[in-house]
Length: 128
Image 1 (cartoon, rainbow, N blue to C red):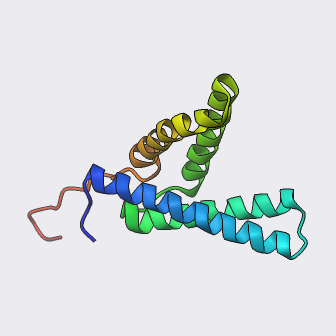
Image 2 (cartoon, rainbow, N blue to C red):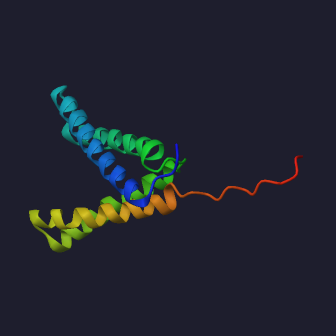
Image 3 (cartoon, helix red, strand yellow):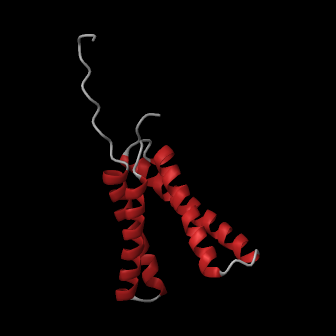
């Protein structure tokens, strides 16, 4: 697939985020209905969303290989930043203010670090 513009990647990243949220909610609901404790159900649901996000972002959003450990680090930093900002700002309305900033920051980190494009080696003009 041909590379996408940064704007198209951002839209794709947001769409993947929505799909992660929906998947996590469905997994959580099914596990709780199956009498799994909420903390365990939440952890499994979050993991399902994270795996979904890595696979979709690698294949569709950024269209290049990425690093699963870097993706995990970026996600953890995003979760920590969200929690820290909400602790400082507080309130339900703060989440609406924090979410776009953290989303843009995680997009930038994933684009430039997790799924960065590596330069292609120069091709020799002479066959080997």
